[in-house]
Length: 113
Image 1 (cartoon, rainbow, N blue to C red):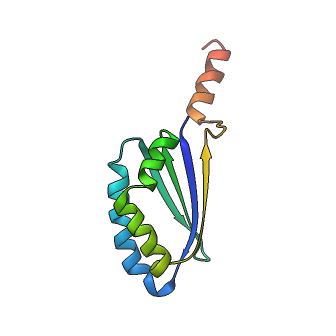
Image 2 (tube, helix red, strand yellow):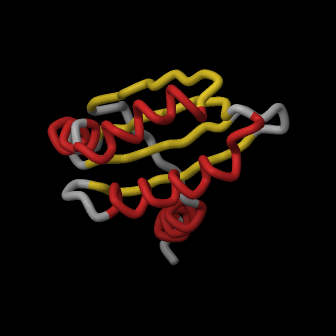
Image 3 (cartoon, rainbow, N blue to C red):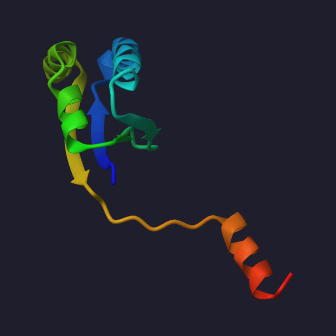
């Protein structure tokens, strides 16, 4: 079961361009780390950003969190870029899935066709 991080943040208005360059560099580093599964980011109309990170295990997430370059960038983010943030870490989250295709195939097989 993966470890999921939900990271809610607001970037200072005067830092958005610089921040994005740094964020892109961190994503490249994270995605090369063992255990990285995925990363998605969404921005709401009010400017709040929500990113969702998935890792294979808590230990692999911890290795990313403690990576020396990432630690430097975390400090820089608090100093220069973030207005605020909240991080929610979910180890072994409960999961349910739905795909239309799977449901359609199940319905077809239930009808004997």
